[in-house]
Image 1 (spheres, rainbow over the protein chains, first blue to last red):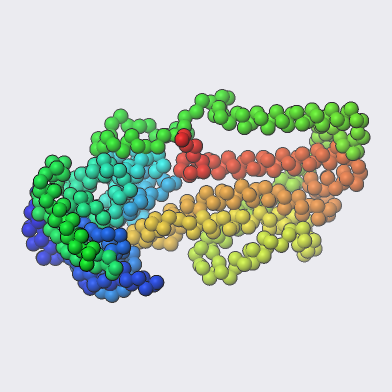
Image 2 (image 1 turned 135 degrees about the vertical axis):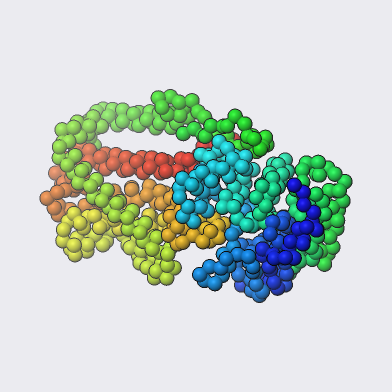
Length: 268
Length: 293
């Protein structure tokens, strides 16, 4: 199914899943990592945060996840339930730059972790984790330990763990940066297939223009020192994409536009 | 242990499966990997040669057995005095083992307590260091006087020596969980006990086991040293007492026999703790993996 960017944007105006308002983050050593960020994330959209290293994209992502409070401003979840402490309890998954798996647990146990921690019954959790592993293409590897898997497969386990609770939002912090290009392309396609299945909101941090254009419906371009948003670029092409798109003139054109925007952002 | 079987096909992916790490699969002789045999046979050959040379020198030079007994005489003494010596061995091993169990229990419990509260660690850890750096020989007499019961005194001395490596290693292990994994547990709102059980304790396991290997040997040393200090203090006397006694009576072959039993116990403890570590870590930890490159 394809969806126009205009339709997604219309939804976004309705009721954002995440509303980031005037957020700044200053670390205790004085570094201003993020300054004055305003950003709405619509339900079900795929957004990339694109920028050079040090532009605060990872810091912003971690704040969305609730790892570290903004120094100024607020991150609201208008549609999420509120917990007993009066704070929103966002339903999210997180994929780190490294697979971040527990080396002492096999693939199945690693994917079961979010459910184990939430107190889901063992049989139920096992069945759901096995399904999720099959979905990321790792059927038959349930009993494999992380050290027995390749880098790409470990990342698949990590994505499976992020998605196994069917979260409303999946936050990804340069998940494919350490992988070779062939594996990365394959995982890009598989990630889009997973998105198409569950339609979660995806926030994808990357420093690759090509990856951000291929994956996202919207690219938020950031600049460094201090980290701030320079442009909010719609990627106006049919969605989700396939291998044909990768070689199309449209893709090349969009990459050029994104690349120029990024260059301007870096130049300030 | 072999790896999980490779599925016939990977529906999604032709690329990453081929990049899986390959582990060495070795030829086995009598159940042991072929490459481990030279490591066993070479020292064994040296040992046999040394024993033969020793026996030869003792016989040729006609050295009296109260100066240096030959290995054959020592072996004979070991057999003849087995009843006395094995009784003493049993006493020493019992104290060693009890001290090790106490060291593991208290070491791990304190380590967990310390990592739950930084203040507790800050205030108590220096005293653990004090206990560790004070030579056991120097406080053993004091402990024996205070405690009264000789077996309990020996146990406390051995425990004092064995306890610290487990404590410090387990603390290090509990604090060395992957930072991102800690964040992940935070994200999923894991409770303190969940984080401990599912993250910190497993992460600490290799460190704890390394500590256990050290403490096993130290518990034996602690027990023997304390026995030396205690002297003939009790009716039940361990191997160190047999060595002292043989020294007074110039029964040097028996002294050697007791010495051999202490060494053998130390080796056995090391092998057992290494084997336990291997059992726990073989599936996942770098230290237990043999790679081909």
